[in-house]
Length: 245
Length: 115
Length: 107
Ligand code: SF4
Ligand code: SF4
Ligand code: FES
Image: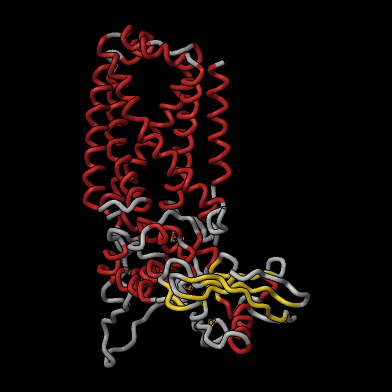
C-alpha cells in the first residue's frame, strides 16, 4: 500500500487492485462539492489508472451493478455521496465481501445469482396469454406481504453484509430469501409449495440469526430480515391460505 | 471491531450463541454431579463442599448468569420469529435492552442470595 | 438447518423457557443457605412432580442443545457435514443418558 498523503482539497482514496490476491493502492483525487463514490472511482479511471476495473450502468440507483465496499461497509456507490462516508479525507474502496474477486472492484456475482435458484426464485405463471389476468386485490394481506419485498435491484449489498453468508457460503442469504418471501405470498405463482420447500431446505431461512445487517444496508430500504422471519413463521402452519375472493 | 459486527443485534446473537455453547459444555458435568446422589446424600456432599470454594462459587455465578442470558435472549429469538408485530424497520433490534437488564438482575440476585 | 430440526429446536425452546425460569427461581431460592445433598434430596425424593419436571427438562435439553451445536459447527468450523451430524447425535444421546441417570438418582 502506498503511503497516503492528503493534500488540501484532495481526497486520499485507497482502491483495491488485483483479484483475490492484491493490495490497496492510494490515489489523490480532487475533492469537489458534489461527488459520489462512483464519481471518484470514475475520475481515477479516467485520469490516473485507465486499466482500473469496476462496474456501473445506470448511475441513478436502478440497475444495482455499482455496489462496492466503502470504508468497510457495502454500499451502492452511485448514490453514496462522499460527504456521507469520507473519514478524515480518507476513503477505502474494495469489492463486495463474500464474493470471489475478479479484478480490482469487480467481483464474480455468480454465487449470488445461484442463491436465487436455490431459494426457488423463478416466477412460474399458471395462465396463458389467452386467459384473463388474475384478479388480485392490492389491499389483500397476502398481496401486501409480497409487495413489501418487491423492487429489489439485485445489488448483493445485503448478501455482502450478512455474516452468516460470510461463515457458511451454502446459506442462500437475504436477497434470495426475500425473493422467496414475495413468491410464497404471490397467489399467481404456480410453484408456491416448491418455493416454500426450497426456502426451508438445509441452509435456507432457518440459518438466519436476525442480525439485521441485510436490512441496515439495503440501499432501497427493503427489509429482508423481516421477510425471513415471515418465512420462519410459516414453519408450523405451512403456506398461507389464498386470500378469500 | 468491524462495523458490520459492532451493533446491538449482532452482539445479542453472538452472546446468545456463546452462552449456549458454554452451557452445553457444562451440562454433562452437572448431570454427573447429580448422579453422585445415587450413593446417598453424603457422597453428593463431598462434591458440594467444593462449591464453598471461592473460584467454584464464581464459576457457579458465571453459569447462572449464562443460563439467564441464554434464557432471555432465547425468548427474544422466539418473539422475533414467531410473534406478529406491526411492521417496523428495525424489529431485529428490539428487546435487547430489556433482556440485558433481566440478565444483570438475575446475576445480581444470585450474589445477594449467596451472601 | 433443515426444517424438521428447526421445528424440533424451536419447540424444545418453547418448552425449556418456562422450565428454566422455574429452575433459576429454585436456584436463587435454594442457594441462600448453602447447598447440601440432604436438602436437595429431601426436595426431590419420591416427588413425582419434580421427577416429571426434570425428565421434561432433560428430554428437551437433549433435543435443543445438539441442534444448536450443529449450527455452530457448521458455521464456525470447516468440519465435514457427516462428522458434525454424527458428533451431534452422540452428544444428544450422551446428554439424554447422563440426564436420565441424574434424574433417577435424585428421585
Ligand atoms: S438478518 Fe439474517 S439474512 Fe439478514 S444479515 Fe442477518 S443473518 Fe443475514
Ligand atoms: S434486498 Fe436490497 S440489498 Fe439486497 S439485493 Fe435487493 S436491493 Fe440489494
Ligand atoms: S450504477 Fe446502477 S445502481 Fe448504481
